[in-house]
Length: 248
Image (cartoon, rainbow, N blue to C red; front, side, top):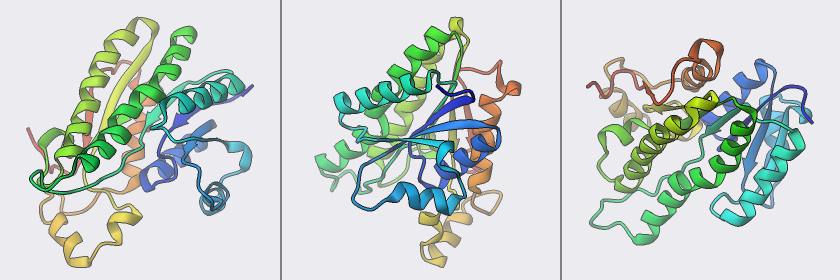
């Protein structure tokens, strides 16, 4: 059973997820991280790359799109740690195509990973938070869930769904001191984005009023604000971190 506060993070090994974990660990959290099982030992490589200790992170090796198996694995991890104080739903994929040419498989893969897994992950965590009478949930959406994006009908639909889900759950959790909020990043300088051609990155930056990509640290800082003491009175809200890309 953990003596530290415990944060459950999906998509932990990605660019934004790694920085969220780094800032949580710096605040003395123990991390429960979900990882899709693969042959290569990604977990140990990630720990070494990020400079984390093995006891900083409990890995849950499971495919979140397999609801039954994933639910069992998540419940076992929560039971082993004895508590869960923070949940960050960060797992996501893209399968871009214009809607005219989009296959049902492309549609389904994105909805299954980006939206349907919210049920699988959040329900056991939320139930534990109800038992504890406290908890913080932050769901990672996207600027494209707010404004839409050409060639991303699937991704935009899933990310918009995250916002609606969060507003509804915020109402259910409020009386048990459980806050539920959303962080909606714009284009962020993750390894995947910065690996694109320089002219493509420049064309993206030209669309952003602040004329640059977000840094993963800035996205993680928004998450930390919402799970920290200064964010205690905020629930059901979407915090946009997009450099002014989408102004209402």
